[in-house]
Structure formats: structure tokens, C-alpha cells
Length: 187
Image 1 (cartoon, one colour):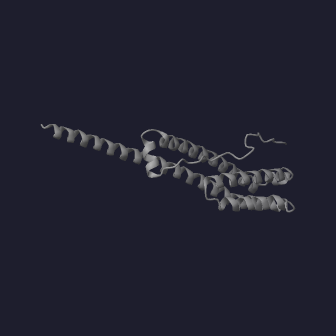
Image 2: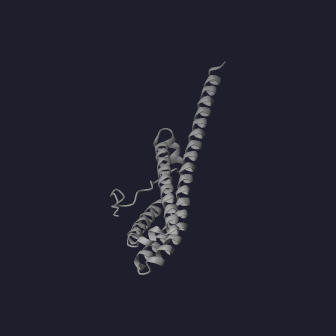
Image 3: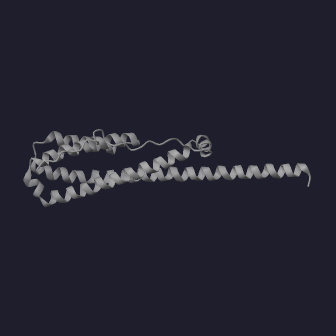
């Protein structure tokens, strides 16, 4: 074999290896980004579920506590803000606002012992509690997916392809301000 043929074969093999590496890295980045999008959609699904349960809960409580207009208005405002949120940051902020409004609703409920015994109210609270648990799991899954994705786009050689193809760092779904404080339950 001629020396030029060997050099051409080596260059061709290196080019094939480089292309295969690029394709593999790109496909891995696409898969990771898609997983993050899927997990974000799961959060949206659970937030929507919560948003669907809240009007029934509010209607039930309104029957017992008609004069608590400020609490009901703050819940309505927070729901609207969450429904209009587009980015993860906006969703996180709106979610925190809604969690605060729901906490104030629970304080109102404490003042109405008959309400706590009402079967419809109990069912709605169980539904809301289950939804809150699903939201927590969905947020954790999303944040785990973001961690994997953000790590992948920073590692070599995928980092080269990530910057070349426009894969950008994703933000985490953050806890509500004050979430680190344990709520006080009084009976």
C-alpha cells in the first residue's frame, strides 16, 4: 500500500470516529433535553390538577366562611398567575404564591370545626393532599432530570456539541420561600 493511501484511510477513519462521536453526543443531549421537557410537563399536569381541585375546595369553604373574602381573592389571584406562567421561574413563583394562599385557607378552616367534619371537605382535602404529594414527586423528578441534563451539557466532548447546537442550561424548580420553616399545627 502506498503511504498516501494509508494516510487517507487513517484520516477517513478519524473523520468517521469524530462524526460518530458527534452524532452520539448530539442524540444523548436531545434525549436528556426531552426528558427534562417531559418532567416539566408532569409538573404542569399536577399543577393543573391542583388548580382544578381548588375551586371546589374554595366553594365548600365559602359556604362556611362567607366573610373571608381576602383569602378567597388571594387564591383566585394566585391561580390566575399560575395559569398564565410560561417559564419555569414564573411557575415556581406562582406556585409559591398559591401555596401561601392555601396555607391561609387552612387557617380559615381551623376556625370552622363543622367544616372539618364535612365529608365533601374531607374528600377535597384528601384530593388536594394527594395532588400536593404528586407535585412534590414531579418537582423532584424534574430537578433530577435537570441535574442530569445540565451535567451532560458541561462534560467533554458533549459540551462542544451543546454549545454548537444551542443546548442551554435549564433552571431548577425551586421551593417556595419559607418552605424550610416547619408549619405549626394547632388542635
